Image 1 (tube, rainbow, N blue to C red):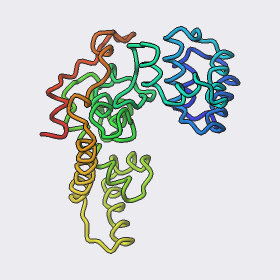
Image 2: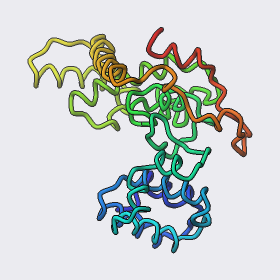
Image 3: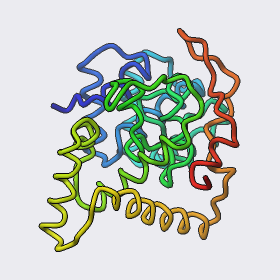
Image 4: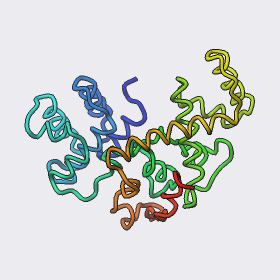
Length: 260
């Protein structure tokens, strides 16, 4: 189905659009134009925030998406992504980290995923350290989503995820290996059988950590600093209903993720 979870949110609840037909058309246009649905939905949301359309106006959202396909000046701005669109129109409420748009999980209400957004090497990437598993789904034990001390959790998830990515595994395997000890051991045995290695479960964090450190070294060489490991400023003071919370994870906690 083209109505995948993130895409459905990005063009649905995120834009106030409740027509599945309109959402499906917006997703189809993303496929045709070669743009990411999360980024495109956030971009159209920023355009709506700028007054180019009203939230909930599906017809206008489709028209704005067509600007990308037509390669108009406006379409080139949209094609440049959420952050560029916000910069162009002076929108402060821009949901990006390292200029990558946030997916469906709100960092103000789910602190661990916010820490991952802020500190992952790609930016607002939920797949870089999916703390949603314990914070929302209770996988490997339920963790309070509002607790701010999530540096260790996010780091561990980022390291394990880097290992999974490097060994060709789907992220969804994490649901099994987090809850089933034999599943984790079996995954390592599988890698050893294919690669001829002698890894143990204890090597997962080491290997994943080495990968993340190399990625961060690349970012640092490109000019990124700890200032870039932050969520958007408006999320620190604008409360999110219904819990009426802000992103209150201290900068010191964010800095500890990769410098424990």
